[in-house]
Image (cartoon, rainbow, N blue to C red):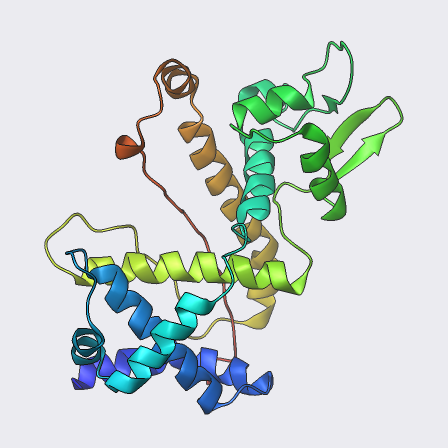
Length: 275
């Protein structure tokens, strides 16, 4: 393996391996999972017909042919895949992002407005928010998810008030799903930029190797506010009225649809603790 590639992999894997050991997960369990991922990626990368043989997969992955055969058979006997576990989380996050970004759901000071749940009201309705966010799910289902996460509260006049400007799951399982999606896309973006002359994705970071603790204590809430405003303004631009108008009148063309993720992250540690 190239020394630069090995150095990159060590830096990427080190925090993950440290976390796994804290959870009591050892090398054998990770090794078996990595074998499955290698085989899955080899199958996904083979677009020709007929499907690849075990020998072809073995050649590409370096995994013993018998092991390839065993793992492919286990995959074929597995139970049908469940509904996308991120579906409900993504739905709730998109609702909150639209609520804080779309002008129709903000007051004159830019704060999220309270939304009526039932009946005729001069206030915007929660159903209007779902339509703007392109959520085709019953309002009651979405509200229950937002209440469970502590993102909204009911007011006495049967209106919903947003109490947090972002959807952050509380359950450990949901946090891990968020981590997988965010870190996975961040890594895909960075690896895309290593790939050649195609247009690079955004991949920038601010760093200080030695900064006083008291300055960080003062800056931390300011940085959080700056990150919130960046993501809110980005979503407002993507929800621009002209774009929404075009989307509403144009039939869905899945060949012309794209998925994006824009993220902001922050980390701090002792100045002597190198990556």
